[in-house]
Image 1: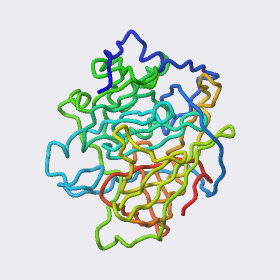
Image 2: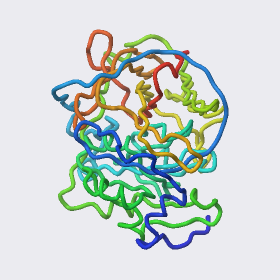
Image 3: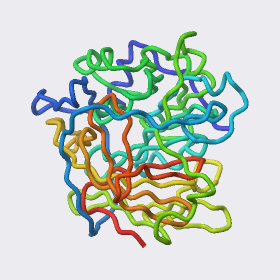
Image 4: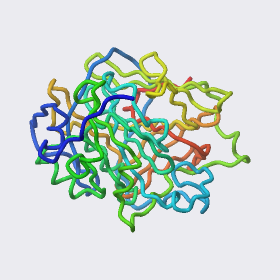
Length: 370
């Protein structure tokens, strides 16, 4: 059992932006369809890369209804959930580090949905959504980004656990459609581990964080349409997918390989199995590759790298990998409040296999289907 120390207090200024000095070159952060935005800090290093694919992102008008899920199913997985209280539980988002020094992580295999976002340079971070299961510990917990606003907005005011911001952006976070569970708000639920380096050693517990939900907190809507036995053969056969996040001649390289025995997509990163701290490889039932453009927020991390923001309101190309097959189509999110819709070439919703889903958000041209 790792050694832990008491969590940080409000006086630590939310981890002083996770101990990293972000300098602002301009404060005009791009807005996501009338939403407020977040920003923060951090980064680490890796390797090189190349790839292929295309997409365009344009702002659309109107709204998109959330997919319907039967009353006895968990909204984020489509799996049977007989516990009515658990089905009605609010969503909890935990921002988890994905830089080399932050791995292996804890809790990533317990999340219902994980969204991989590019933060700065070639480094990615995990936007993990919990509702069905719990994880103790969960982490390392890291700072928020402006990309997170469009991701949290459809989730019915989720609990939001993150570490690090500054006075300028704290006001923006306070106005966002989320319940702030940073160390400044829930310091007693965080611990520092002595077996991890500073900045990568802040952990929490979903059990503790869920206890902070208000009595009238609402469950999240379904984020995906789920397929039944009748349409399990939809799509084209696929062995997997390769995704890269590139910047400055370096890249984070991600691969998913279809595993017939487990009916899942086994994830590797930079050539090694992507295991959690318990040694279990990440292997979701579904992988969604959603091609998005990234915009310079005007912020820089301590190394001078651009802090990016994914443009998630609009439309673009999307590949949905499920049941050993891929369906290539489109994603659409007309407003920040709308749930992202994934449709095939005919404009029909793509059905996912009930279970966990990982969503990758690479830029256009940064993936190859196998």
